[in-house]
Length: 130
Image: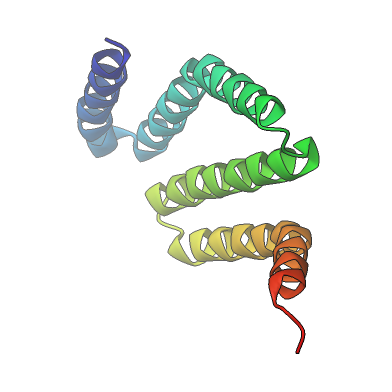
């Protein structure tokens, strides 16, 4: 079970960070960052498989891949922004974390505008004219 490995690594790193933090706070923070990166890299293969499955479903459903790719990029931005914001919060930089979150939200909105435009145009075409 992969989740047990992830949680186990996280718990061990947490306990080590708490012990190290008393003597060397910088090393404790580096341990936390390293652990977060290791967990992220551990999950990259899973993310790749998810992307392949979604693309396969989209092809089978005759959905334009441009929309699927855009949605996948939006999801990626959300996860990366969250990861960066959590790291900066761990470093005690809440103000920077909130700016990372804001940047992610603005990028998501920017990427979503073409999809929203298509949805609005589709709804308008469905409305019967009198």
